[in-house]
Image 1 (cartoon, rainbow, N blue to C red):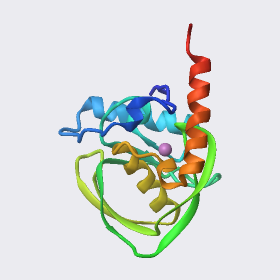
Image 2: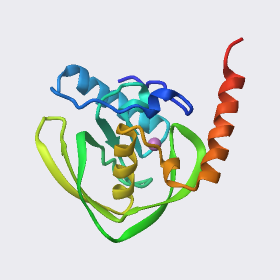
Image 3: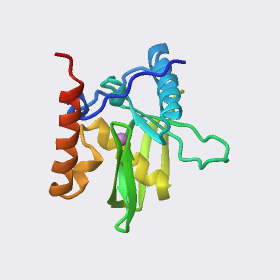
Amino acid sequence: MTTRPILIIPEPKLRTISEPIAKIDSEVRKLVEDMFETMYDAPGIGLAAIQVGEQRRVVTIDVAREGEDKKPVALINPEIIAASQEMSVYSEGCLSIPEFYEEVERPARVTVRFLDIEGQTREVEAQGLFATCVQHEIDHLNGVLFIDHISKLKRDRVVKKFAKQARRAAPL
Ligand code: NI
């Protein structure tokens, strides 16, 4: 297992649409392993493949709290097939937008269909933090970031800040 560098905004790749996985081969299994390693190392509770530069519909999540046993979940080609009317609000963050947190409202419960690492089709009803996390990660596969769900004023401010940092970090 290897940790991979995480892309930070305004990296344009983060705005691209990821491709479905046609076959779960050793390369995909290696990607999933590396994503878990990268996510735990960060540390974060969710990661989409595009965040490590792979334009593929793969997500890793572990919403276990500190002190609890790890609950790693890998979702391949995940899609939301149902969402509750009821909404919930969480303060979200993103490994691609370090140290920025803002409240986002999303459906409180979603049903997600995906392939597991064995290639089996599964459906889970997600709620609580897991529901928020899975929606945040599936957004990544469609080039959407959580800051797209906050006010334009706040989004413009954070985008500007990261653009400035990127310019400062760029080699001459
Ligand atoms: Ni994110």
